[in-house]
Length: 223
Image (cartoon, rainbow, N blue to C red; front, side):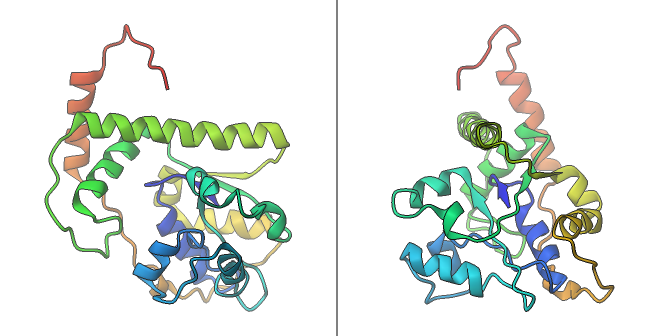
């Protein structure tokens, strides 16, 4: 799954994992995150991370899953050609239509330390237009890099949007299963889906304020 931060990817990954046949996609190239969330012994070495993808990330039918951000490619690309190291790849591209909403969500997460609904907030968040602008800039770059990758390689990913995934996660799961040529069984283990939507009225208020303060229509941003 190729995506960017605050795209609802953890939510979708848990739904995919709940099927028992679509792998267990996680950020396996983010060893610090894996150690924090679920595996204190997760390897720092990239070869070990690839091994985890093919084992920890796999369901019994040997389908494995991986979630990766464009900037995580930079962490590993000098040491490994991950696309060739991972066999029989299929690509899912998860994006978010509301880029400003995504940037606001990321800015709040950076301030609070709460990247998942299951985490407590370390401190309250305050409106910071410059932080939102920085994260918006990063998200635009992340999106552009994936689109460049698909255009250059000719890869046609399964494209999913955050807004539609949140509205109907089972439809998104079905599309991934169809891509993999699998027939889903009705016995999904929804106990694995513990991530909830974090967006609330504060996100909407910040987005509205940002547009009022930063929304000069006479400026075409340089990114």
